[in-house]
Image (cartoon, rainbow, N blue to C red; front, top):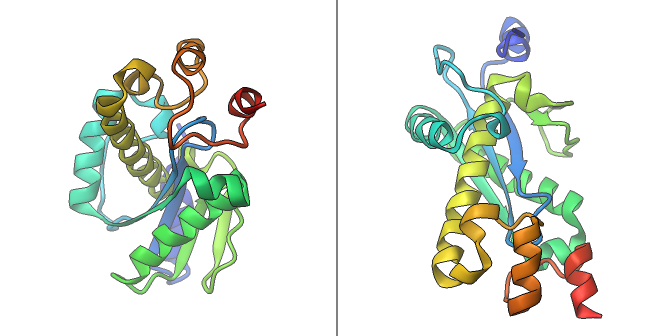
Length: 202
């Protein structure tokens, strides 16, 4: 088991105390925004079993989400599907992370950011960590916030358009989703530059 506090501890040892972890959710879906979160954990933060949000059950993610938002300082950034089409998903993910970081900076004097593999050009140091959501407690916490926030948005869309099955696939290109897309056509919120959607527009 790797030490999820390794990176944070190394920075604490250098006298850097206000550290944000950032991650995004929703790069792959055909529908909806990309959502990022930035989380600053207190040094005595403990949450047994916290790991990359993709490895957690939905029930556990929801429990962790409630605990994290009540016990940390966090910010959320959301970039719409329209903007994803305009600037591409890589740039949109980065923009969402910067928005989330800026939300945190309004609350605390952020000194350092650990990001999930994303180099970010901001006025404080950033360390991109490959598979960071499985290596850093701060990034893991951000991955949970980002994922649950985005999933909640998909549940809301599902209420409006139940025939598309958003509550099940969350906008990802599953077989059922593609079938629904062909049957019912495009609704506002699809990413028009993504393959299967692009094909339909031809």
